[in-house]
Image 1 (cartoon, one colour):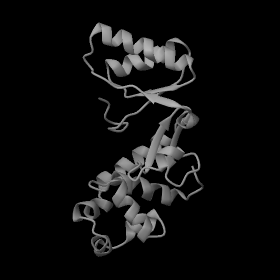
Image 2 (image 1 turned 90 degrees about the vertical axis):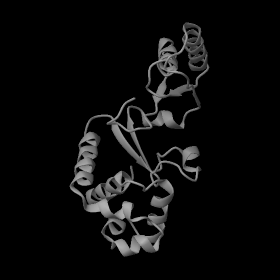
Image 3 (image 1 turned 180 degrees about the vertical axis):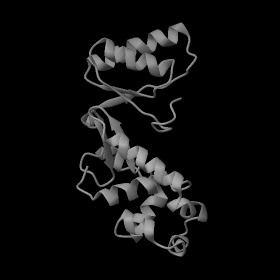
Length: 184
């Protein structure tokens, strides 16, 4: 993570947690303001002038957003927990090319895996036995070939994909699209 002040880190986390403020709108804020702290402290009228809805600006200073940011900061203090941001050299280069790439990536484990060749495997949570066996076999083959197997963290095909790679000492990346607090 680039060297930023604790206040700037908290501001980025708070912006990230705001409702209705996705990657594109967050980019708009970062283009208009020199940093997240400035964006967070700007008047709501400045946000409206950027075309951002009131639902983004209103909760900026809420207790809930502050508490959730504090929880994220506490999570980051744990060993092997990382936060990769758009402007971080460790942010995955190919992901950064997407117009709506996630502004923040919370990583537990080896963040360098995100730069290695990967193949994503997804499928049903209620897969048939044959489907699970195919996923296991395919993931084993991919891992033996040097690929990082990427999947969600759900039961079914996701779990079989991770297990297949691990069976042959391969590496996996679990993508939690709903965040750390809400596993599916």
